[in-house]
Each structure stands twice: as C-alpha cells, then as structure tokens.
Length: 96
Image 1 (tube, helix red, strand yellow):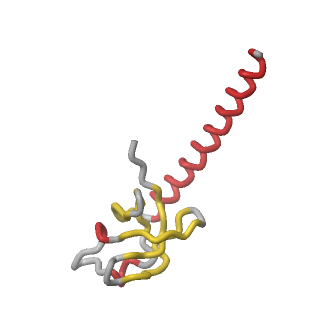
Image 2 (cartoon, one colour):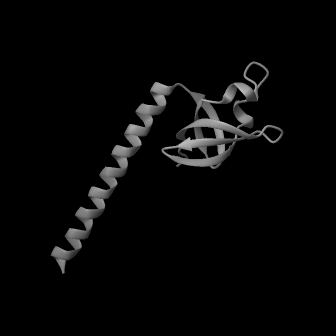
Image 3 (spheres, one colour):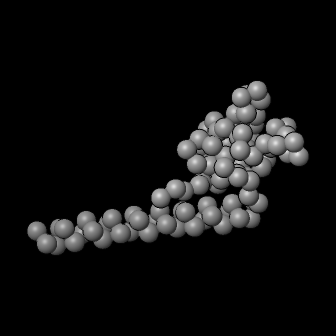
C-alpha cells in the first residue's frame, strides 16, 4: 500500500535540485518537490504549501483543511493500531 503523509513546506534548502524542508507532524525532513513545481507555481511560491509526501517526494499539493483532516485520521488510526496490539497481547497472556 502506498501512503502519502501530509506535510507543510517550511523552507527551500536547495533551489537548483528542488529540495525543500517539510514539516510532517513536527518532524522536519528534506523532500524533493520536483513533482509540484511548474511555470505557474515556481519554487519560490512553494513555501507554506501543504503537500502529500511519499518516499521523500512531494507528490501533490493539497489544501490545509484536507491536510489537517488526513493528519487527524492518521493519528486516530495509529491509536486504533495501538489498541489492537494491546488487545492481541492480552489475548496471548490469557491463552497461556
């Protein structure tokens, strides 16, 4: 499964190679922005853009509301995964 994680571009770190620093839930990482740059939306205009990041590439721009909804959903899924893991662990203990 391929999953794009929302992040916000906070800085252009290498204009020539189209690398930006993106904040993904507080983690700041270098990301290639070549897929979202074009004549109508040059590198300089990318700061503060919300993007979907997959394996180090900003695959597309998204609006802030959609980004926040997606981050909320991903956080909820993470909490559900933790609950399932805890339930599975307690089941193993009960079976032994």
